[in-house]
Length: 364
Image 1 (tube, rainbow, N blue to C red):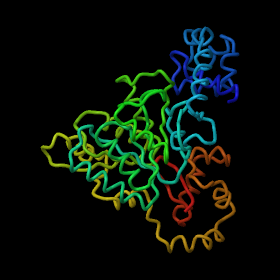
Image 2: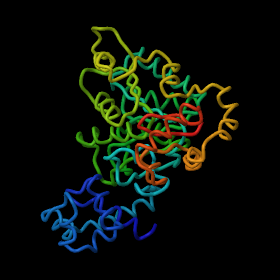
Image 3: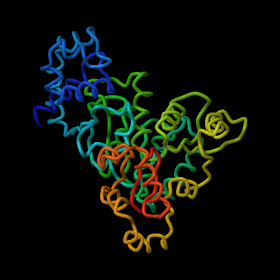
Image 4: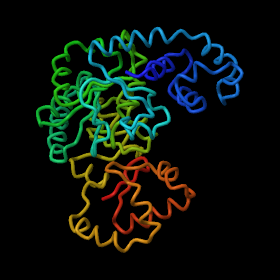
C-alpha cells in the first residue's frame, strides 16, 4: 500500500478527530501526510480546530498504530477505501458524517446500481422473517445488493435470504475485521465473502461495544438507496437507522403491524409520522425509487437526446454509469446552483434523467 494510506489511517485515529474534522483537516492541508507536517500555527487557523486539538495532532503517535493496522490488513486480506478514492461509495460521500475510511473484505462494488438496506428487531417473529424473505426474493429480479448488520433476527434473515436468492450482500460490522460478532454468525459471514463483503470503519482490536452500533448504523443507512424496517419496538437500533436514513434524504420503508404488537410499534410510528412508507411488497419500492421507468420511454431516449439544447447536452455528457449528486454537477460544470437545478428539472421532464434519493441524478 502507498505511504499515503499510512497517514490516512493515522489521521482517522487521532483522538478528537472524527470523520467530519478529519476530512476538513485533509482538505485544508492538501493530504493526510500534510496534516502531520503542518505547524501548530497553521493548524490553528483551520476553522473548528483550535489550539487544544492542534496540540493533540502534533503530539499524536497514531502513525505507529497505523503501521500495525497495515500489517494486519496485509496478513488478513483486508482492503481499505479512502473517502477521496474513486471507488469510495458515492452514496456515502453525500453524507457529511460518512466514514473517512472503509475497511472491507470481499467484493468492492460499492457503487452498484441498486442497493437496499434491511434492518429490524433481533427477536423477529415468524411473520417478520417470512416477510423479509419475500421482499428479498422479489428484489432478486432487480439484482439488488442487500445491506444489513449481521445481527440476530431480521439482519441475519436478510443476509441468508440474499445468499439463497443469489444476491450479493454486505454485512456492516460494529468492530474490527479480527473477529465476527455474534460468533454464531461466522459461517454466514464466510458465505457472504463468496458474493459480497464484510464492511467496517473500525480498525482491528476494536471490541463490539454498545456505542459502536449506532455509529455503525449510519453506514448501513448511507450505503443504500433506501432502508427497509421489518419489525421494531418503539426504541432500538432499527429506528436509529431509519432516522439516519431520513436525515440523508433516503427513502425509508416499514412493514406495518398490529396496533398492539410491541414488535410493530416502531414501524407503525414511522409510518404514522410519515417518516416511512408503508411497505406491502416490492412494487412499493419500485415505484418510490423510480425503478419502473417504462420501456417506451427508453425507446425514445436517443431521439430526445438529439433534440436537447447545447447546455442540456453539456450536463448529459457529465454523467457516468452511476449517478451524480447535484453538488458534484455544480462543481464539474461551474454553473450556479440555481441554473444547474433548472437544467436538471428540464432534463427530468424530458425523460432522459431520473432523480434518486439524496438529490442524486442518473441517466435513464
